[in-house]
Image (cartoon, rainbow, N blue to C red):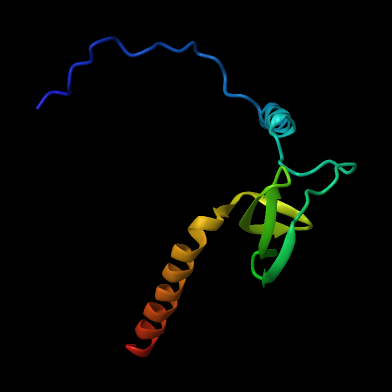
Length: 123
């Protein structure tokens, strides 16, 4: 069986020598310096955590799950479930729940507790 035909020829690369380890290290350092870290600057003010109702440490991760009530522009109140590390929220690791969503979420969490408990008993 012959190899499949390509609709266009494969690119031809110049015979450049491979970069030296020193050149690779310099390129890697430049890329690291340009990459955003997401870490706060030393003079930055931490965000308002809201009214924290519970803080559950996650020792293996070095984070804590905070359950808080916050407000948007002083009027719209909502529940905030978010991971925090070192006084800062972890980017992309949280959820905001509207007051109207809370009863359904609480029911689902209670169902989850019952199912987990039943599965543990069925081992």
